[in-house]
Length: 510
Image (cartoon, rainbow, N blue to C red; front, side, top):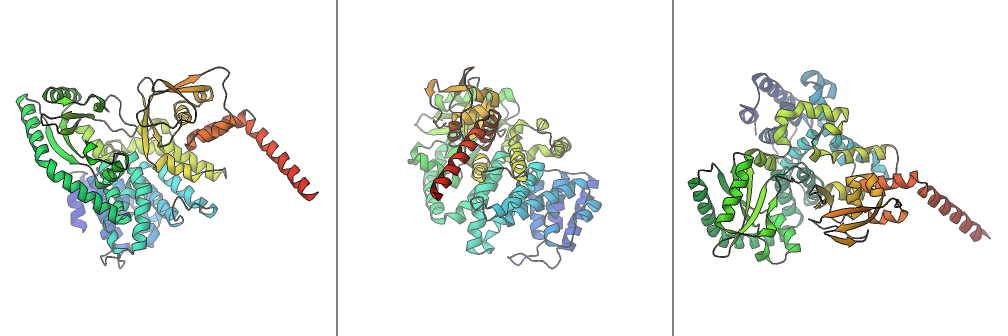
């Protein structure tokens, strides 16, 4: 990787003046990193240049690319933030500072499970840096992806440590930003290093199945392509193979690979929204649809912003094939997530982050407010459960629906109260029961993917202390505890505990 490759990738994406600043940033980074080498033996500058190319490919704004080039300068060289701000502006310095804080926080934390009181400052730095500007996350994702691509030069112990952190923290962050392609790359690389035997076994199973299915799928692709061309519907159609890690996870739930219908899928990209539904109708006229597998993520996008129509059909010879239908804009967002729109919206988004005005951010990014709330709690010395943060932000997700069809994103294992507090804390406070898929369920019921949840309320209902065992998310726990404190319940419990403790000590002495 050299300067010419970066500038070649950037040409056509940025203006002449921006390219000049980009070139100047490369020269600056090359100078301050002079003499430094990576574990591979390559000059260190190859790493920030590779990070820059990834950011360019993802469609990021020029300040993010420059920050990517400079992201290790403050931590690893004599360069200072003041120098960077003077040479490249406040925004670039702001981003470099954010990425540096994430790196410093990581260095002070072995992992989220090993959270200790002495790592409190490091966790705070991590949360604040990530919550301030989403571009910090995206630059860090590019940094992590290139480090994972060159992980073979690290010791086996470091490989596993870095891979575990990647699959537990960075891949879920990519997913929350709807950066599907990046998430898959991070998961596949991590899986290979963490569980090499399982990786090879799953890959062999997949390859064996694909070798039998590819010819049949290609026949379906040609048939659909010819039909849409005949109907004069502009389109492109290609195949998508499920990732090895995704298959590995699914096989835990569905042990028979023959029952997994989305191992391979065909993706149809069209010009506009109306054509998406037109193509769906054409597919259902050609083949028998599986009614329970038709999903409209256009009308009701996933919480991370993903949009597409999904349908699984059965061919005349009994083969199951999944189709995904979307516009070009939806496809770009599905592949590159928020990075796809940053080239046009960076000023508005950046100002919203800096002012802390979450209302101006896209709805699919409001989860970042949870990061900021967590950082505030830690800063104030309040009780904070880091494991809940991990579940909230980095764990597996489920999607549940309101009776009106609104989608809510919750961690796997969430309870009805978690859903209620996500809808509105005042509504949750008056909850007297829950209807799940039309059936009354207790507060202890764990929600499943696709559940329809109705909150039943009554005037006399109010939060109770035992509700604390039926909330999983830190958001619900924080709101519930605030309501209990307001009602004086926690105070009475604390006083009772103190009285009991004093009596026990007195009895012990006597």
